[in-house]
Image 1: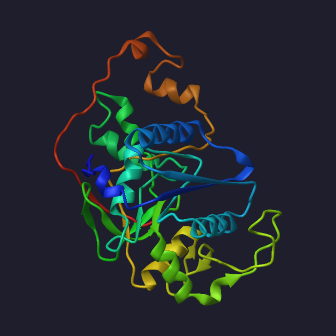
Image 2: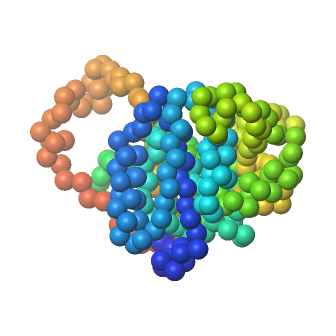
Length: 297
């Protein structure tokens, strides 16, 4: 895991707004803890952060557009989307804020989809991972929400990497991106429905920065974050991802299992004394890792 050295001076000219759409007003406990840690650290270091929560908007594209409009009416310089089911380290927020600027217009952190890639778990187990510490296998369960830039087949894990598309679950954007977006795509202005709030009363147009679209070249159906990334890159701006960040993504899971299957491998169907008493040692390798891309999303 990498760590970029940042001083308070590096952030003094930047003012951050964190926007979180929450359908139903619900958020995950790990998101709450992460946000509390960020607030505690920011108070200690004198870093000013504004929060904007949007409740009960069922259409995520519309919710994100409302959040951007709120940001643009503020004096903040940077907008960070953090979804309410994401867990993060507070230092990662400072890192994104430090990196996001003229050279890196949009910067994201990688987080896994809400699915388990069992074939990757098997591949890791076949290579000996989990022999000493079965919990290590949790590192291999995910398909991550990004696509690397064209031509990139390998990248270092300790420096930002250019990507084609990234997820808005943890995405930092500077104000200049939205300003250029509006100049470049004026046809995306629309009149939002009246949502019984002061600034969205149905009398003025806002921008559809986020929407879904079918890519005319690949025929892929692009989600709102991938469409935004696509349009940002079309403007000549850059999207990056910080591969060393380890975000968590909360979701539901249906637990199953089979007693007959357990019998085939000779394991106890209950929590045995042996498994409870086992001491797990973690792998503390200090080698700088590389990652080879094998498949796009």
